[in-house]
Image (cartoon, rainbow, N blue to C red):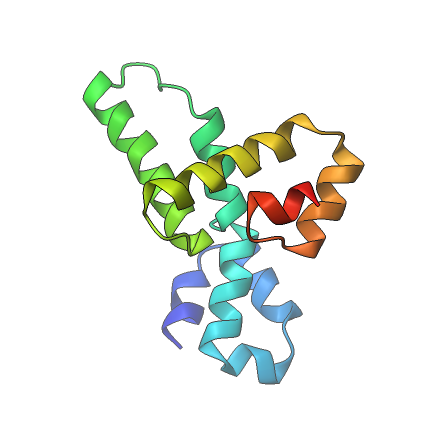
Length: 122
């Protein structure tokens, strides 16, 4: 009920709730997942924000750095990547590879949800 109350003033949010089945609308995790996808608060969304963020007009350098770090931290958290150097390196190089390769290949690899760079290379 809290989510419905929060969405009451937002037509996009309400529309999303109405598109869910009655069963899904009662499931907090399903509603949360749908809202996170709709507002791009996903692993891929935070990765994109991290890679493309620009300083807002008048934004101080320290606040801009806070935004960059927040995007990075959420990306890593949602990717469920261990925060060791090796795992972070693997994630960043894998994502850079995906960004640099042809879109159809990247889409195919993302669908397979390959967890490591070594698996992507095969």
